[in-house]
Image 1 (spheres, helix red, strand yellow):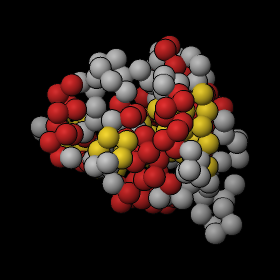
Image 2 (cartoon, helix red, strand yellow; image 1 turned 120 degrees about the vertical axis):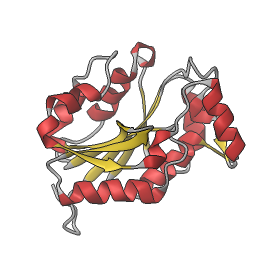
Image 3 (spheres, one colour; image 1 turned 45 degrees about the horizontal axis):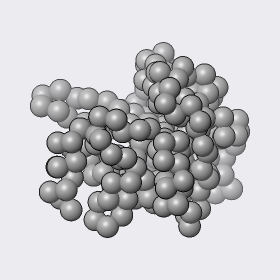
Amino acid sequence: MAESNGKPSLAAILLAAGPSSRLGESKQLVKFRGECLVRRTARRTLGVEPERLVVVIGCGAERVAHELEDLPLETVVNRDWARGMGASIAAGARALSRSVDGVMLMVCDQWRLRAADLTHLADTWRAHPQRIVVACWKEGRAYVTGPPVIFPGRLLQELKAIPPDRGARQVIDQHMDDVEFVELQNAADDLDRPEDLDALREQN
């Protein structure tokens, strides 16, 4: 279903439910330049003007929700957050309408991502709304792929059916003929380990 301006309709899911066990503290609430990452990422996602933004929360849900309460978005509590990322993807997908043309899937810890990066990704998808648009970046001589990703709405049911302990990559792998890659070097930096947190704090 296209928006009234003729563009294909885009919704977004921001995953912010995990326990950040390897990092040792909640990555959702880590502050970068005075703003916690879940709020920073939500604001950048809203910059691509999604029809809806659903933020999936779980571990530390009340604190995360408090950081978002004045933004035009919806929160969905994934009570199965401990079972893995797939449970959060499925929870976010279940909150969306079948009529949406595309779904942008975001994580909250890619702290270098800029609004312009997400706009580039969204514009690429809007030119080919039946394709899966996947971010990629260089690590050494090789390219690595990962989030953010935009899925066409026809794959919403597959996102809802992802097993709790799996991720969205299994959906991408099943539809490789429909994948388009967009280089977003700023997506390369995330927070998984304490040394990643040190790198972020050096830039604060």
